Length: 347
Image 1: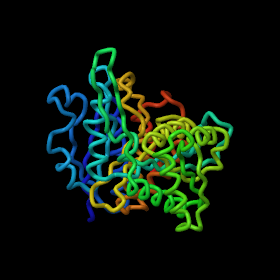
Image 2 (image 1 turned 120 degrees about the vertical axis):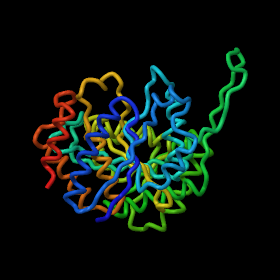
Image 3 (image 1 turned 90 degrees about the vertical axis):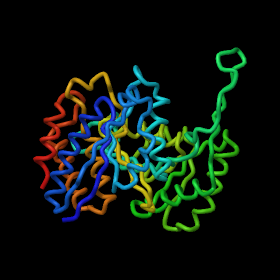
Image 4 (image 1 turned 120 degrees about the horizontal axis):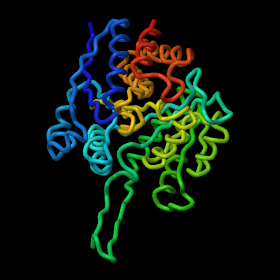
């Protein structure tokens, strides 16, 4: 029997709950599909930071390198550890070390879920550059604590980095409805974003079957709300993609439905799959965390591993569950009930 080794990092807050739920579903789908998932769990989290002074051990990256994939719950506990510490100590180092430069986030309404818009038939795939841009970490602060303090945050855009994420977006559009929206703010950012637009125009002739349109990020944000059905694949920088996908989560019913994949396209290192939502420490003890985003992320993981039939089985079970009214209203159903319903819907 084929087996895949998965590194599980539940993280903080509801991360522990939703990863446990997702794992129950994924194991059941794997059994039905004739393969196995073996898990190794790592306690890396804000609690781990408070105990050790690090979000993960010094050899954490090398420890993860041998796995087929990584499933992450949620990391963060702002009351105890600053988000700037938790993010830069775990999530961003993994993305960068494993060259997970394509962050994929699907946005569509599951059956039975009511979004805040009149539109219901949208299906948007957001592709976010994941390893450089505005989150490169370049910059610094001087004269801290004085009236002369200066903070500099430098965005890094490389030709290789911009070209590879745009090509990834073009390929995704080619496999879907053939429409690509490239997002910048080149009227205001005359270096990095003009650079991005130039590369978009340079690559477009290589994909004559894809209709490409360049948008300013504010116009694209408005379009996601006013005419989401007009969009297919959206490709954006690290910061713009981060913000736009929260809009995407909102119009699909909330963060409880927002899945994501951090992909290393050449498979030279493991890819990582995670829900978009945070650790939600305020509800972590209530038993009402929605596991759908994590289960959906798990389905994306199965597809990446080459188990498309199992991934489809999980997605159909999710759709059957929400179509039956379970998991469609925040706080209405308990996590265990939603998980059990998805498992029961697996066929």
